[in-house]
Image 1 (cartoon, helix red, strand yellow):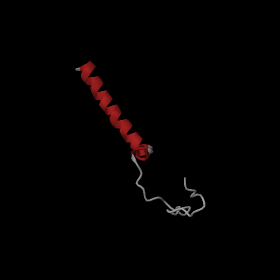
Image 2: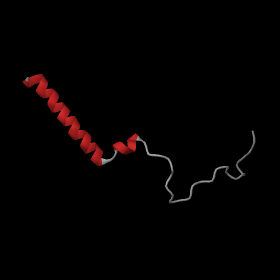
Image 3: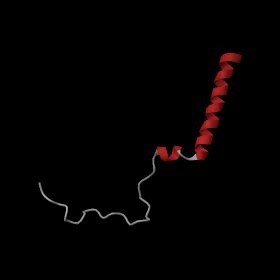
Image 4: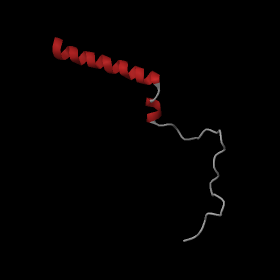
Length: 57
């Protein structure tokens, strides 16, 4: 096996303090409080509508 530990890296490391160009995924979006509050309100409304349809009508 070749020893490559002494050679320079082929891809330079990003400078400290720079933002990566990779887009953030869905888990980052779901960690935002306004989105979670919105989804909780919509889920509550759907739950109330389902309970109303099942038990009241």
